[in-house]
Length: 76
Image (tube, rainbow, N blue to C red):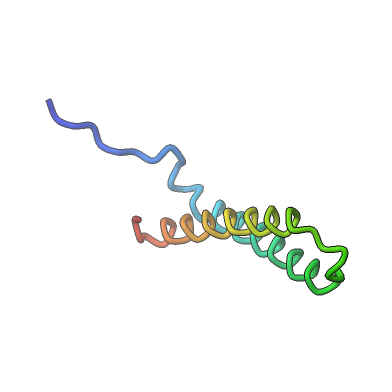
């Protein structure tokens, strides 16, 4: 019995759209993080907000980069 081929759960045609969308969201969240850091004083900063914002930006930029690589033909 031959092994089954591995198939993507997401249609290949969606890769460019997902890439642009996720990278755009990641860049907006990153920009909001930098604006928050520049405009808040040390006394009013929240470590939890910084960590959550950084994690969300990282996830969106990471998946956006993944779909950009997949859309351009680099299969990782």
